[in-house]
Image 1 (cartoon, rainbow, N blue to C red):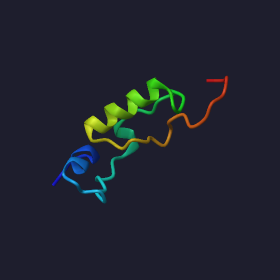
Image 2 (cartoon, one colour):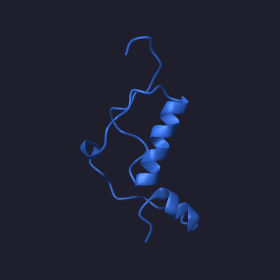
Image 3 (cartoon, helix red, strand yellow):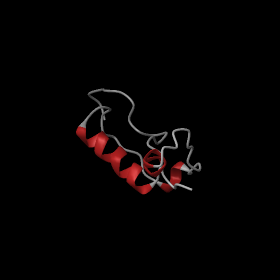
Image 4 (cartoon, rainbow, N blue to C red):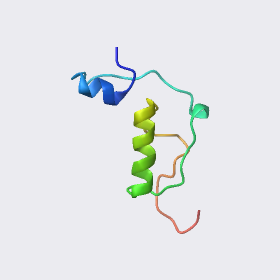
Length: 65
């Protein structure tokens, strides 16, 4: 049984749903969506078997941070 989405895709399991992980177990990011920084955060989460999205991730562009 795969432990991450990446492993599941490699095995051809397209409907794999990872175990739910409490958002307190990983940190959110203030990186703007679509930036290289945000993509890097998501790539690291994927490699660690974490959800791609954190409920407190930055979701939109604004000049305020």
